[in-house]
Image (cartoon, rainbow, N blue to C red; front, side):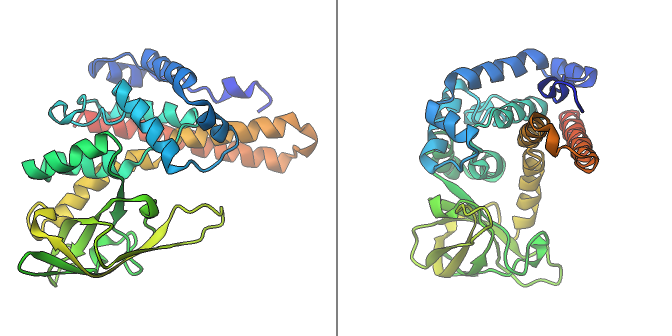
Length: 323
C-alpha cells in the first residue's frame, strides 16, 4: 500500500477487454486516452473547480457539460444511428463512463439518455420518438424516473399508483419516492397500475407525464449530505393523454425489464469509486501519523471490493456484447 497511489490504482485494460474492444471495432487503451485528453482540455474551469471541491453540480453546469459531450458525439453513442447515436457496444460506453467519472465530470442525467431513450427507440411510436428524442439529445428536456413508491422499492411488481382510463387517456393518483432530480424535471416516466391482476407483474403500464400538469407536486427528501437530489412526487387526478402511453396497456413490466438491463452497468459508477478510493488513499499516505494497521486493512478491503466490482462490470459488458 506504500507504492505510488496514482500508479497503484491505474488499472490497465486486460487482454480480454482489448480483444473484445477489437471485435467491436475500437482500440480500448487508445480510446481511454482520448477520453482523458478530452476531459483535460474541455472541462470548463468552474466545473473543474467544483470537481476538486467535491461540490454538487447545478443543473446549468450539467447541461453545459452534456452539450459538450453531445458535440463530441459522446452523449448518447449507445443509441441506434437512425436516432442520433453511433451503435456503440456496451464495453465502449462503459470505458467512456468510467473515464468521465474518474475525471470528476458531472454525473449525466441518465434518466433520458440511458433509461427512456432506448425504451423509446425500441417501444415508442414514430410520433413519440420525433417528439421526445431530440429534446433528450440536446439536454432541452429533463426527465425523472417514477418507479419506486413507499411500498414498492426494489419490488416494482408492488407498484400501486393507479392509472384509470378516461375518454382522453388516463387519470393518475398516487405517489413516487426517491425520485432523483425531480425538482429539475420537465417530464417523468412512470410505471403505473392500469389493472388489478392476480400476478403483480401484470396490469402495469408505462406512461410519460408532464411535471407541470395540474395535480403534480414535488417535495424534497432531506439527506445527510445537505444536497437536494431526491424527492417525493405526488399525483392527484393528473390527466395523461393516451398518446403518452409507451407500448400497449399492460406492457409496463416488459418495458421496465428492458430499461433495467440498460441501467445496471451505469449504476456501478466504477470510475467514481476508483477516484474516491484513490483520493482517500492519497490523503492517508500524506499523513502517515494517522495510518494504523486497522486503517490499512480497511483501505485494502475497500480496494479489493472496488477491483472486484470493476472486474464484474467489465465482464458483464463483454457478455452483453457477446449476446
